[in-house]
Image 1 (tube, rainbow, N blue to C red):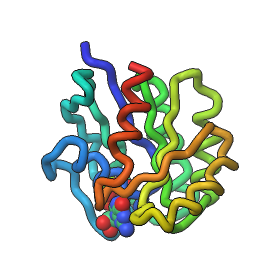
Image 2 (cartoon, rainbow, N blue to C red):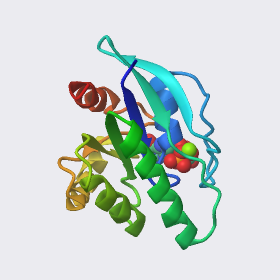
Image 3 (tube, helix red, strand yellow):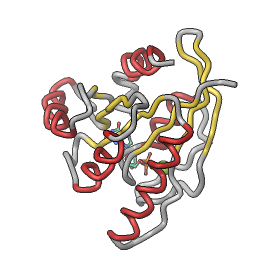
Image 4 (cartoon, helix red, strand yellow):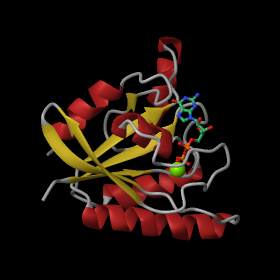
Length: 163
Ligand code: GDP
Ligand code: MG
C-alpha cells in the first residue's frame, strides 16, 4: 500500500488550499470560514516518482474553543495513528496561536516524522515571519504559499525523504 501523508493544522491555515495545489484538482473545499472541510479527503499524489496518499484532515464545524481543542486532538491522534509522515501546517500571517501550541504538544510525542510548513508566506519579504515557529519545537519551519505555489517543491522534497 502507498504511504500516507496527512496534513494537520487548526482551521483556516490553508490545509485544503495546500491539498488542492498538490493534488491538482479542486476536490477539497476551500472557504474563508473556518470549518468548511466537512470530511477527511484522500487523494493520490506523487513527487519525484514517489507515490503517496495525501489526506486533508478537516471536518470542523464547531464554535467553542473547548470543542475546537477536542476536535483538533482527535484529528491529530488519527493522523499520528495512520500517517507515515505528518505535515503540520500553520499560518505565517497570524503567527503562533494557542491551538498551534496544543497541536505541537501532541505531535512532539510521536516518533512519526513531522514537517512543519508555515503557509501564507506569499512573498520573499515575509520569510522572517517563519522564524517564530521555531518555538514550536518541531525543527526547522519551511515557508510556503499554497496560493502562489511558493516553496511547495522544497516542502515535498522534505516529505518524500521520509517515505
Ligand atoms: P483550512 O481550513 O485549513 O482547510 O483552510 P483553507 O484552505 O480553507 O483556507 C483558508 C483561507 O486561507 C482561504 O481564504 C484561503 O484562500 C486562504 N489561504 C490559503 N492558503 C493561502 C496562502 O498561501 N496565502 C494566503 N494569503 N492565503 C491563503
Ligand atoms: Mg479545509
